[in-house]
Each structure stands twice: as C-alpha cells, then as structure tokens.
Image 1 (cartoon, one colour):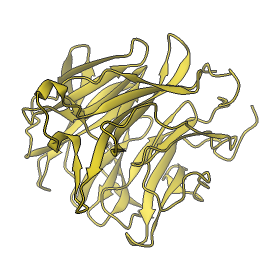
Image 2 (tube, one colour):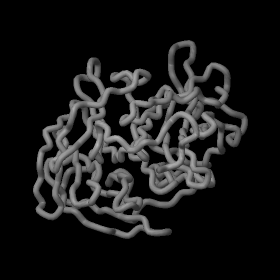
Image 3 (cartoon, one colour):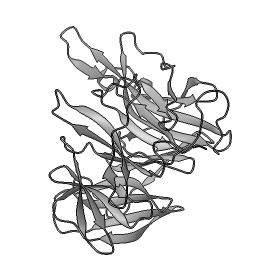
Length: 332
C-alpha cells in the first residue's frame, strides 16, 4: 500500500477554534514524540466546519455524524467518503423531527461487515414554538410510550433497519468506546443511576453492567476509554482536588482497579492514553491539550489550544486501504 499523508500517525484530535458564533470544528493529526499538531484535515463537503459533529475511527475509516442525523464514512488516506442514506425509521406521530442522541461505529466479525448503530429521539414543536420530546407526550398506557428509536446500518447492504431498543436505557453522546466487536456507552435508567450499556455487533444484542464501585453520581466523573486493548473507566472527582484518578479495567464480569494516577494540578478532563499507555492526554483548565508522562511525572503543553471547553476529543487512528465502494469490506 502506498504511504499516504497520514503515514505514521496514530492519533487525531478533534477540537474547536473561534467563538460559538463564528468558530469551526477541526480534526488534526498528532505526530512526533511530543504529539505536535499538523495541518488540519480537509473535511468532506457534506460536513461543513461549523456543524457540530461526533467522530470515531476504526481500521482507518472515520465515522462522522451530527445531531440532525447526517452520517458519513470517510477514509482520509484515500479521500474516499460516503454519505449514509436517510433514516429508515418512521416519524411517530406525524410532525416529529428525529434528533441524534448517540451513535457507534463498529465491525461485525461474523459477517465481516462494518455497521453503524444510532439512537434517535423524536422532538415536536407546538403552536407557540415550544420544543418538547416524546417523553412529555400524554399516552394512555406507559408501555406504549416510545422514548428512543434505534436503527442499524450495514455497509454491505448500504441500508438501515430498525432494531429493538434496550428497555430503560438512555445512552450518553460522550465517551462511546469500541473494542473488538462491542460498543460501550455511559447510560442511565429510571433510577437515575449511571451504568454501562453495551452492544454486540455480531449478535446484535444489548447488555448492561454497573460502573466501578467508587463511582458516585454527582460526586465523581466516569469516562470510558480503551486501555491496553480492554474497556476501561477513568473515575475521578467532579471538583479539582487532590484525589487521584482511578483507572479500572473490565475483566470478564468484573472491574479491576488497574492504576492510580496522582491528580495533576490545572487539569480539567482526562481525554485518553497514548498507544503504549505511558502518556496521558489531558484537557487543562485553560482548554490547552496537555501531555503527562506517567513515569517521569512531567506535564507538557502541546501548544494546542481549544477555544471552547470540553469539546476536545482524542481519536486513535490506523492508516489503511479499506474501501467504501464495492465489496472489499473485510479488514486487511
């Protein structure tokens, strides 16, 4: 395979520059020992810079989506991209507009097919312009209430189809994590307790399990991420005190506290780890991207500044020749 413009790059950064009214989102490769930013990638036309979008990567393909339900698959190495077809879900009742709640992009090892799953919620406007969700509509029987709708896209068939929604599960848009055929989201149910919702792409089944034991809603953050090829959860206090980060790793049916990391002053969020796990990427209180070496305990400023809080996202990337057209879909 010919070496493309992203040769040797294993991390991308999604961020935002400018004010809310006239700024833009960007994706920039990070390279070198200090993970310095390179020239921003040129986003495909269907996704203008000013539209808010989510981003994830798998086998060299980037998946972009926005709250209006637009979805795009893109191989930035080859430049090939594909705008996914419109939703297959019927709007119910008439007059509803569907908005994205969260999504996931993964690989089905059984059928060797790339798939996209997304959760949509219906919104309505009354005669006075007030917007409300289906949760607020009166129904004769609670079991008839449709809170979320879920659909699954297959790249092989280039089509969406509805799938059953897991009962009493409302996934979050932030920190979705894909590992080896499974997708994971933070979610909550009627009890207002957060948990992890998972989806098996091969068998198209949902399941759920609790967060680590030291997570307390309202007192600690939880952030899902990959660590050493396994699902991990970073748990740390809401306020910026001296309490350390706890990194828990999922092993089978339980969590194991893998490492405890001293809290770094001036840090707001943990974004993720380098490929070897030796360095942490952090968002500073001043919205700078920071790099922390766990062994030397040295904190470096990468020079990347985000102009809006809590928008930076770290994306692991591997250059590949996966095609979006034809039937060359299996991983090489």
